[in-house]
Amino acid sequence: MAYTLYPLKSIPANLVSRIAEIHMGDAGLLTKLGYPFVLRYFEGALTDKDSFGFFAKDEETGEIMGFSLASPQPSALTSKLTEEKIWFIRNIFKVMFTKPLAFLQMVISSVTIRGQMYEPNTIECVYFTVDPKFRGRGLGRTLQNALVEKGRELGYKKIYASVETWNIASLKATQANGFKIIKTFREGIYFRHRLERELKEA
Ligand SMILES: CC(C)(COP(=O)(O)OP(=O)(O)OC[C@H]1O[C@@H](n2cnc3c(N)ncnc32)[C@H](O)[C@@H]1OP(=O)(O)O)[C@@H](O)C(=O)NCCC(=O)NCCS
Image 1 (tube, rainbow, N blue to C red):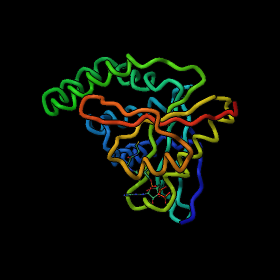
Image 2 (tube, helix red, strand yellow; image 1 turned 60 degrees about the vertical axis):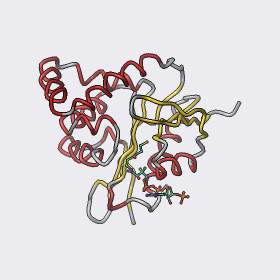
Image 3 (cartoon, rainbow, N blue to C red; image 1 turned 90 degrees about the vertical axis):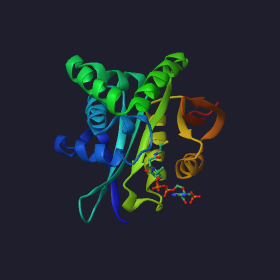
Image 4 (cartoon, helix red, strand yellow; image 1 turned 90 degrees about the horizontal axis):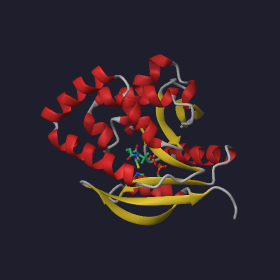
């Protein structure tokens, strides 16, 4: 499998939808809200000044195989979903009526996020997702490790990730990248581990 990693923000605008499609393979809340939210989220993330990430491109076919995204302020990325009020109200109403459980989870998660303490010099590995065709061959781990290396280069002190307890592939990749489980907590229907890794020597 020959591929190259590129900075996520260098992706051509017409391929952002491919990132959103790949992300639909993630089982989290954003996916449950539906494709329009996923696409809008990544369009916002790519214009956010502090977020960064990578995408992997198959050198033979040019296909995008997976991506990773990190941010020092993940809530700023979610907030971008509400920036265009009419779009947000129209789409959130659809979610309320067609996916009431996802709506309820969104309310619970936004309260939980507000309760989390902001940690300076810390980034979150917000997402890393690999197209199912390319899973199980080390790409997820490589994409996440690229966030670790870039985070260190940018001078951040710590990186953390929130991984659902059932998500063995993500847990294994994250632990192989040097993250340690700090705590396990509940967020609505989700049971998650918080994993952290120091980026600077003490
Ligand atoms: C998580 C994800 C990115 C991992 O990508 P990947 O390219 O398949 O992962 P890797 O090949 O780097 O594998 C990482 C480890 O998980 C193991 N693994 C991969 N798939 C697995 C599976 N389905 N079950 C158990 N272990 C698995 C690998 O053997 C490897 O372990 P090792 O280091 O001991 O060999 C991918 O499964 C995915 O896109 N999942 C959906 C999105 C998601 O859940 N993202 C993470 C959100 S926190």
